Amino acid sequence: MFDPERRARHGPPGWPQQVPPPGAEDWQPRAVAWLLDQAPPEYRGYPPVRHHPLLLVWLVAHHVDAQQEAVRRATGTARRDLSAHLPPETAPQVFAVLDAEQLRLRRLARSVDLLRQAMTGRRFVPRL
Image 1 (tube, rainbow, N blue to C red):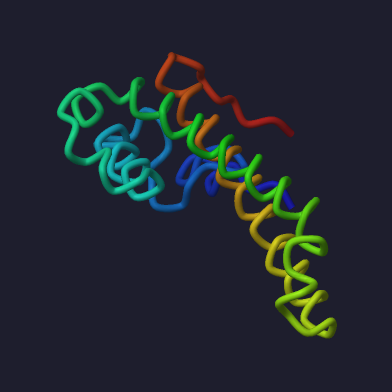
Image 2: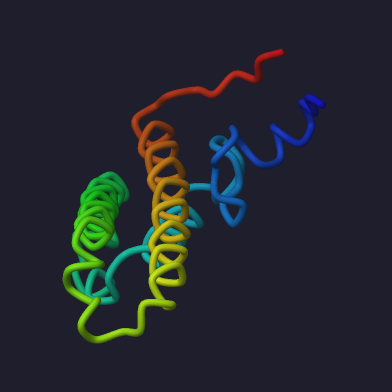
């Protein structure tokens, strides 16, 4: 059921729960903190990344894209690469891990993209 008050408190579907919706007080500093948690730890050491949220969201989007590509490649080569080293009964577990990671990364990519859109001025309007 559509709940406009929830949308106002949490942003559009896929918006990170830890980040207030765009326009709320302190949404952007909290978005930066959340993005830094999604990025490689080294990003915290680069002042331009910490001081320019749009640069950070752009870099994190590329990082997530690279992770998604790595999981796709791993899925495609898992049997060949691991069959000589793991018992056959672990194959379903391997693919379950890869499937779960693909889903996590898809959700993460959506959240990062929503933050990028908000940082570049997009306004999210609740729809019925």
